[in-house]
Length: 88
Image (cartoon, rainbow, N blue to C red; front, side, top):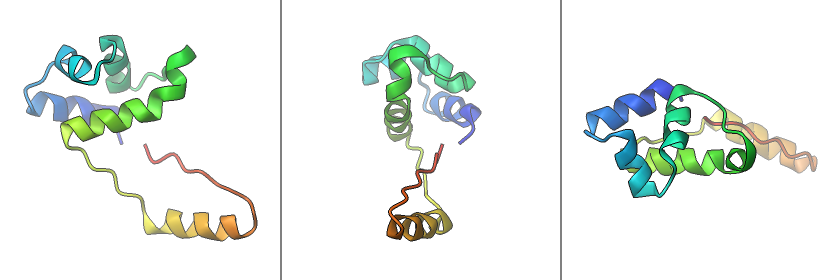
């Protein structure tokens, strides 16, 4: 998902970065960095996927995994090799 979609969805809902940050109890700089496509660093990097999922949920953005990736994961798991895909 392109970071610009997050900003567009936020603006369509009439929310500021501070509104989103307040509702999710996050630092506004985290929201801003995610919208700009900047990778989070330090302790925040561990939570980046969770932050994004929370933002998507708040803004009504739905992410659909492709069936091809799901099938590939199942095949890989049968050989005891686990493959994780970045769906963002």
